[in-house]
Length: 348
Picture 1 (cartoon, rainbow, N blue to C red):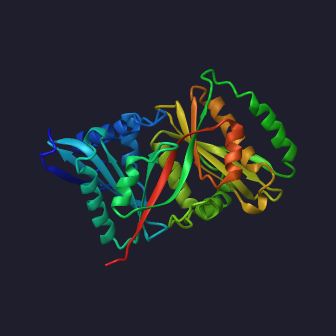
Picture 2: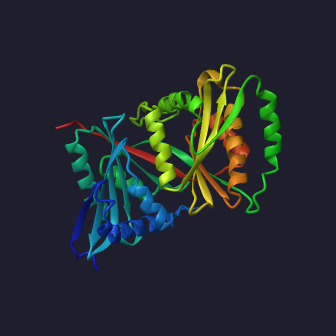
Picture 3: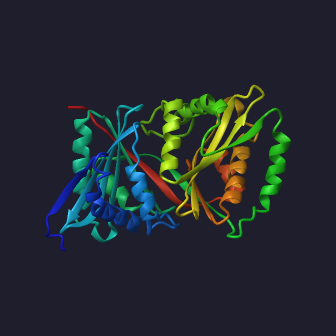
């Protein structure tokens, strides 16, 4: 294979992903993603079985088109066009990964052109994407994005909490637990594991619906989401079907209203690291250590259920000082940056 070999773009729609005959192509996609993950400063790999289950899990909240670039039958790049269906109807989320051995050969430019053509055809007017970067230096993707008209609009530092492989709780957490208890007042912390308790579903969905408006997003054109019981149930079912452990904690006020939450997700087939999906304390309930309380509760659950998990990853904007302080006290340290880019277009 050489750069003179023609580049072929294959289109995979959601209904195609369940066809057995496309498994070799999917394995090529997984290998590209794995090669990219190997460049990260932490273990970001995903077992083949988990990858396949994830891409084949049906969903009604988004429509995904996966574009696969091949040369001489070898997958060299992947470009996703993800269209939210329940909210943010102006948005097209573009994901682009080129195998490290095939970068600077026109693969990314060709894939992005096809992604943009499809996004434009849907009438979406904000095209967003993101990429990892070193803590201090710009990544090559910065120049690529700028060259194609994408502005940096937001970003965050990715942080990692390293845990002992013996499953023990960090010594500092004992003092943090005492501090949380001293400030609890009428608030209570309630964990959830895989499914939110029926009595908490409405309140939990209300927080998820406000999430984007309550966290720092910079100039990213992302608005409130529309969460309800049906959407939450679909999410829970998808996590079950893809063998993802999903758990966390909520904070309740004196009236049993959900006023804060945090969540973690962990691949049961590769339970060595987990991601914090989201954490939010409603503005009117801040100042009571609730962010620390729900995170401490969820992290303690993690230690007890998955003692072999030695890395927890999260991300926060630099301007989110309260949550950054919580993460630092839990033991997180910065390892990487995540950069959000965006192009706004006028529909034709």
